[in-house]
Image (cartoon, rainbow, N blue to C red; front, side, top):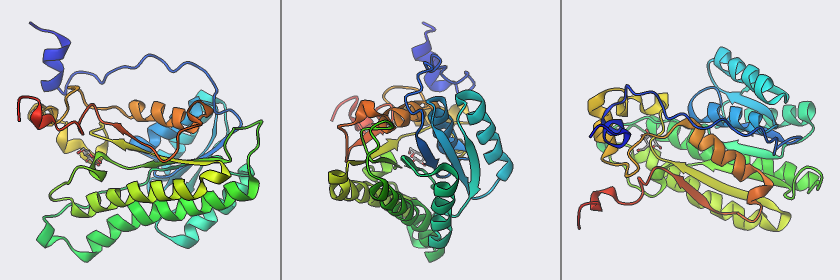
Amino acid sequence: MDTIGSTLPSDPTLPPVVMPACPIERKLKGQKALVTGASSGIGKGIAIGLGHAGADVVVNYVSGPADAEAVVEEIKRCGGGNSYAHRCDVSNEAEVRQMFERMREDFGTIDILVNNAGLQQDAPFEEMTLAQWNKVIGVNLTGQFLCAREAVREFKRRGVQPAVSCAAGKIICISSVHDVIPWAGHVNYAASKGGVSLMMKSIAQEVAPWRIRVNAISPGAIRTPINMKAWDTIEAYTELMKLVPYKRIGEVDDIARAAAWLASDDSDYITGATIYLDGGMTLYPGFETGG
Ligand code: BGC
């Protein structure tokens, strides 16, 4: 029988799942958000999603200014909020400080930080260079530390503004299913995401009394350039679906919606939590047929 369920897993040529249009509910109106690594992939989707929800958004990027400007234009168009692009390497302390200073000057403060910037530099373990290790840990883990620290300083300085949000600030760390699933050939990446997981929980524990919420989203396989080899041919997509009980690849919109909700007061009692947004990838799919 030719149902969607039987064709989708093996056919990457089918168009992406189309979500119902976002209800135009400006839940984040008046809030100032910074999304790192927002010129492409998941970060781009989240920046636009927060824009849809009414936030003013700083679009951080490290390369490709034209792509970042396109995201800025889309945010202004769809949400009516303010937006600008800012180049900064999140693993560089001085550049991160400067990015937050400018945000305070231009937007007055920050209410939402989405720690998204991340990369992969894969290699078999015995061939992995120190440069590859340091680069991935530097951007994926140290970058999140540096940005979270600046955000917490500002949240504490400013405190809760009840007209804006019940919380003094929200941090969303974009982690990965590989904060719990070991990943051969990607030791630096898995180590960085495992680090993000406990860094997030430890910060959450420390800053909760100031009404600062810190949570993580751990995406599985999302259709972005970082993992194109895993979905752009029928063979690769079929292999990938063996790891996804829900039998479809994730779209950036799946992540954007969850991020907008986690940043809103609708999730006000949630802190220190990780949402696995993975179509069941963390459900040990190898056990689907026995054990
Ligand atoms: C990685 C992707 C991978 C996915 C699932 C993500 O964190 O960046 O390359 O497809 O995990 O394995």
